[in-house]
Picture: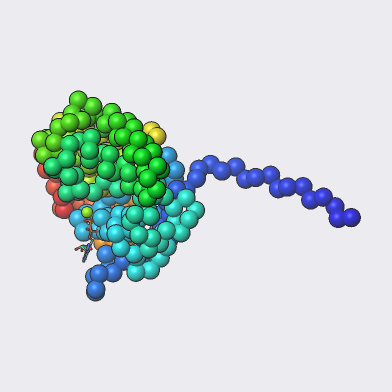
Length: 271
Ligand SMILES: Nc1ncnc2c1ncn2[C@@H]1O[C@H](COP(=O)(O)OP(=O)(O)O)[C@@H](O)[C@H]1O
Ligand SMILES: [Mg+2]
């Protein structure tokens, strides 16, 4: 009779990785937009990706959300390899991205926009299930209206909204799919200071219940909301850490906030 081997006590798990990139490289013809990038996003965190223009931030988002595959490397979401998975499947497994404003259907109302988006994660061909889907979609759309502060405007045409409201609707469209991980690419671009403050507050609120990956130019927004920051420069990760560490990192100061950096009145840092 073999001796019973006691189970090893489980190692305490301090945190869980929701998204992980391993040695990601993306080339466009001869141009290497991302070069051997590694990153790891902890579940529940607000994780920001910063870097000068052209450093590869949007390319990274495109790879994660399935717009196109990496040239090499792997992407894992909740332990599952999603490298090269098409966009609609990525949405279904719980990753949503706020696109640019063009994804808002201007001729539809705010609520209709949210309902259309809410159906994306649970599309059913069966008629009865489809009826249920529509009900779920409507409920989710109502919830999202409140989350993004548009409860007073469900029946307004999207085209009638202010720029800031349209950007919030854009975030709402991403939220409508009920994601676990939300990708936001420059959500405050083109906003006034007033709108930026409201959006910063919205992002902070969302990050209480979701994992958020944020690309943003405005350093006051980044430093105000981030739990963790990864810095890209020319397609490579040059720093990764807590906001306080990043602010003092020499390579970051040099590359991103260096002497040549200027700050616009709206807080945008440009190189
Ligand atoms: N679809 C594409 N086709 C060709 N080149 C691209 C494409 N997307 C991005 N690039 C190039 O990749 C580099 C990184 O761009 P991007 O990821 O948009 O940077 P960021 O979002 O940090 O400003 C840039 O040189 C850009 O011109
Ligand atoms: Mg970009």
